[in-house]
Image 1: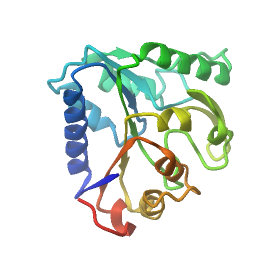
Image 2: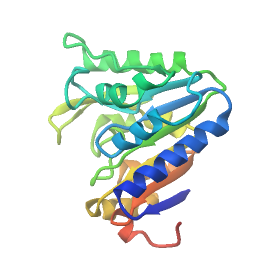
Image 3: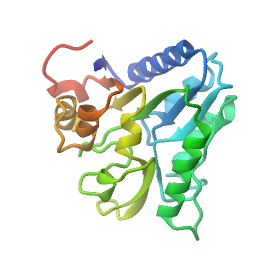
Length: 231
């Protein structure tokens, strides 16, 4: 596990884009790249969209999605398409939302799409965020998604009063690299616990159990309660 501490959000954006670009360039072959939602990764996607990378063997998919149509302001599908996917020569897998479709059915179908589109030889890296409560993707504390098997699952998140769809622990744990982006002082207590592998936080459980190479790219405020040495 490595922890990269950045001075501010602009530095975090640059460092994350550089890290992802280098990993992608080093692969020289198929890449499966799971995309995070929310605000923090958006400027990173904009930088990646103009990076001189060979995207032709890359599959882009979503680590989680809100239960909204793709033209909704909260849609990760719409955001990822607008800022990255439409600008690069990669295969993008939008989440199959439909107003008349059950969330659980859509999530299972999306998981099957991801598996079918990902070559066995692909380098699998996933970009993840983290909330104040230690959730990552849409693996929230107290939800049934925490015990789900398979690739993708839909879960009711009581704290948000909505359905979410998310990659499962087992699928995320099997990636070659997990890259966490964490920003803001409000996340400092949870981040310290997650880095220590505290399983009361979903992200901490993932850090504890994953065989993946794990990289945290965080700002100084979020890193304020981490003990030990880091870059």
